[in-house]
Length: 151
Image (tube, rainbow, N blue to C red; front, top):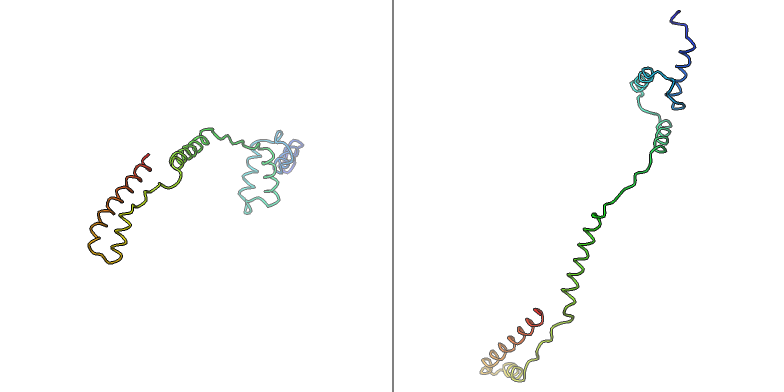
C-alpha cells in the first residue's frame, strides 16, 4: 500500500471529520484524535477567530440548546425591606398623628398688655412691671408646650 492511495475507510473518516467540523453532522464515526488535531489546526491558523456568519450560527445553535435560568428570589430578600418600611410607617403614624395641630397657647392677660402699652408710651417706671408680667406669661407658655408635646 502506498501513502498516496486513500482507502475507503479513510475517505469515510475524512468526510465525517469535515461534517463534524462544519457542525453539520454527529461526531460518532470520527476518530477523536483526528477531530482534536483538526480543531487545534483550525484554531492555530493565522485567522484563528470565527467569521461573523459562523459565529452567529454557533451562537444561535448554543442559545437554542440552553434552557433559560429561572431566578428564584428568596422570600427573606423581600421580607427585610418590607418589614423595615412597615416599621417606618408605624413610627411615623404614632409620632406625627398622636397630636394633630399646634398647641393652644394661653392668651396674654390685661395687665401684660397694659404694661406693654405703658412702656411703649415712654413710661420708664412700667418696665419692671412689664418684665415681671412677661416672665409669668413665658412660664405659662412653656408649661402649655411641655404638657402638649410630652403627652
